[in-house]
Image 1 (tube, rainbow, N blue to C red):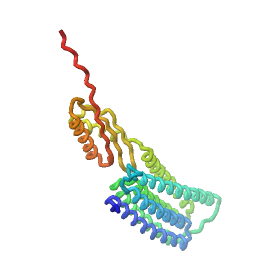
Image 2: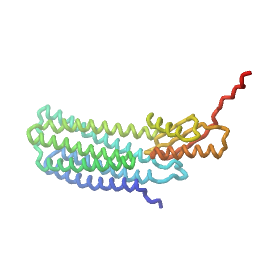
Image 3: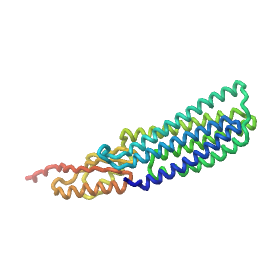
Image 4: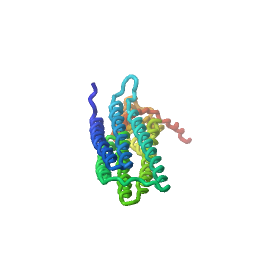
Length: 304
């Protein structure tokens, strides 16, 4: 049985911590929403419950994506993690869209003169606790996600941030309602939902780029070309192709070298290029180097 890597262990740890926090906050906010008669806090509790689902997705896909290459998957399972980030982001969009629709409805109710009940202080306290807890959880999760170069963990971190911002909206709305301004709650919710949807869209777009083998950015390719040309024996770069594969990069290179040298020497040059790229670009998982003979111009006969 394959033992989990250090990267996988970090992903498991941060996700399990997130699950425990989400369970505690969901129960707290649901109870506070019911006891404090706050629709905003109940909606916030539902948002926290949705975080639990994304935590489960991350745990499942982190295990799948960490599996090594096999006969049916010669390039590994890295794209499963990218798929997880898409599912998480779609969940964010769905939750944000649902809260947005409800908030717009509440704004219409207030504008038509409907009276919304005054929420209790317990709902305000629960919102404050949620803001602090979820912001701390976001910062911890996004740091681990960037350390492990895990798009699904980063997406999950933003789900935590969206929950924190949702609680900010709840706090402002509940406080405003208690001070006689009930319309503040749905207005804050609309602004927060728009931001959640924007962040989710950016994550989905980035994940789709990785699923369709998008190339690296121009600056990374230029740096790779520089590294290749610095290797002894390389006289040119005939071809350089890159593709994003989950959180890793695959590279195909064709270099040209002196065609009169031995096969052993040409192989040594290719190996140097291969090792240099993997050394200077840690995200490179696979690098294929092909050597072409340089087409030397024939020497002109001396003038008579």
